[in-house]
Amino acid sequence: MQITSKMLALSRTLALSKLLRRTLDVEAPLALRLALALGLLAALLLLSFVVTMAIGAVDVPLGVTASIVMQQLGIPVGAAATDVQWSIISHVRLPRVLTAALVGGALALAGATMQGIFRNPLADPGIIGVSAGGALGAVVAIHFGLRSIHYLVTPAFAFAGALAAVMLVYALAATRGVDPLTTMILAGVAVQAFIGALISAVLTLTANVNAMREIVFWLTGSLSARSWTHVQLILPFIVVGSILLLFFARDVNLMALGEDSARSMGVDVRRVRLIMLTLAALITAVAVAVSGIIGFVGLVVPHMVRLVVGPDHRIVLPTSLLTGAVLLTWADFGSRLLLRPQELRVGLITAFFGAPFFIYLLYRRRQGTSL
Image (cartoon, rainbow, N blue to C red; front, top):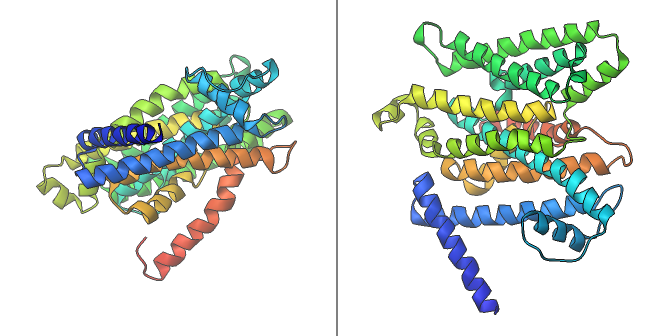
């Protein structure tokens, strides 16, 4: 029986390897290594789901939690759960954990994409103003009390603000048909500074204490009270956007060698860059729309991944996606657990661990060490 199960697992790994070879255009040994890495990360993510959902204000046994997760996946196995346990896991913790995984994966994948496109190891999804624009949209909606219309109005404004900021940055950088990376980065810095001033002005004019607290809540990032509606809202955008980004992994490798080298190998640099920036901005905007600003995930995760798997973006992009999902799942778990029954903002958790890593990267760069 054990031999049969091992053979089945090996056959699934080989099948995944073949699929990855066709999708990402990788060689057989690389595809097999990638399949093993993704399989390990997927198993770690599933384990993270079970553990982080089992522990909380009301603890649920791990076996019961795993059973409920399997039943949600359509696999009727495991121990019986009480109605209270089923309600806690299915309606409260599972959608929150799924939202954390989707947001973390999107931010990490967008960060890895930005670092590859800009050939800048310190780039992250906020470099083109998407996070700042999302924050401004949410702050405006909260300040004017538009949430009373519908609870999804704030995410909608955040999404619109994020896309508007990206469009403004690209319009500034593409003046006269030119879109150099340096100009785009400078335009992103300018737009972020302007948006920051607008947010400060709105905060100054906000007299409502509850609105002020909600704005601070949004600016520090949180996954509190995320529901199945939020999961359904972001799932199609992040899944489709992430899959499309993975198809361009080989092009990112070539663009990392320089634009001239990429063009000589048949890459339409301007078109590919525009498509990838649009997709990265889209998944980041969707993530910001339901979580607020969560910093350092898009910066730190790609570096963590490259330390283990190397610089090849055909491996870096998909593994960053799953690693970001795992990291933010545990960060959100820490935000719920550390000051229980009170709750920290998940953005504070990621900043607390991400900032020292960022300082470490700057130190390596100062010492002349490649990042």
